[in-house]
Image (cartoon, rainbow, N blue to C red; front, side):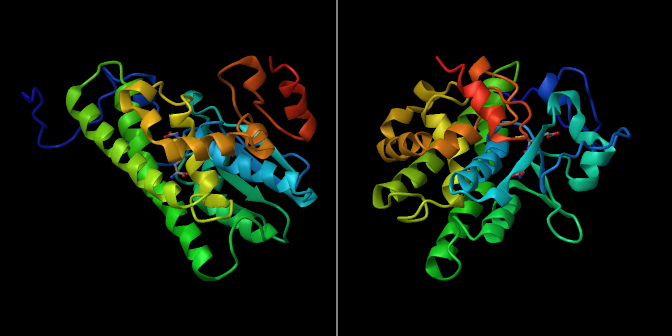
Amino acid sequence: MKNEYTPPKVWVHNTDGGNKWANINRPVSGATHEQALPVGEHALQLYSLGTPNGQKVTILLEELLALGIKEAEYDAYLINIGEAEQFSSGFVGVNPNSKIPALVDKSGDDDVNVFESASILVHLAEKFGQFLPKEGAGRTQTFNWLFWAQGSAPFLGGGFGHFYAYADEKFEYPINRFAMEAKRQLDVLDKQLAQHTYVAGEEYSIADMAIWPWYGNLVLGKLYDAGEFLQVESYTHIMRWATMIAEREGVQRGRLVNRSFGEEWEQVPERHSAADIDAVLKLKP
Ligand SMILES: N[C@@H](CCC(=O)N[C@@H](CS)C(=O)NCC(=O)O)C(=O)O
């Protein structure tokens, strides 16, 4: 394929020609404006959006609440990344990396800021003693797959999803490269799920909660509309697992939180109590 672009000697930030998603980023970090974050009444304050990375955390919180753990009650505020809200001074104060999800745990003497979705999952799983084995091979296996998700999903989202679904122009080279990697990852996961009920073994864990929002949503046709292109039906073990996880009440509730897109019955932009989700689920056809 002919390369039409010759990189200049020094890269220059060019905002022409990008789409909405290309243009929200800058080559520097830090706040662009002064704006404090809202704070609710619960010990856990979540600042997020219902993308796959955001869903990981709200699924875990709803699973903890489903177990009857009242200390897992949380306020979830919407951070609209399309409107640059991740660059407010308040958000940057919690997460210097300006990406959702971010959590403030106010349960102790000092507030604890937690960012990176996997760090939030581990923080909450350890705090409440759930969904992460306390020791041994099961704990390591859970971490293996949790970190697999953190390392792999950016190729699915930032790579395949960006070029296949979001980029205004479709380029063969990056779509080919990232489709191949997405299918390789799906094959890795399919083979693991051929041997085990859940991703990290026979127990449901934070590894499933990290992986389902990306790879589960993808095979169930809820991400990028790429099912036919990637032939997702052929990953029968992922399909079995994705369908089983989708039936969990905690997952059905958690995936709606901080969602401001999709069907009306799927949107719970802010959550302060169970009633916020109940009210929206009543609209489900
Ligand atoms: N590795 C991070 C990735 C988080 C991430 O990429 N968040 C995206 C939304 S899914 C975001 O906030 N993007 C805003 C931006 O890039 O400015 C995590 O797992 O928490």
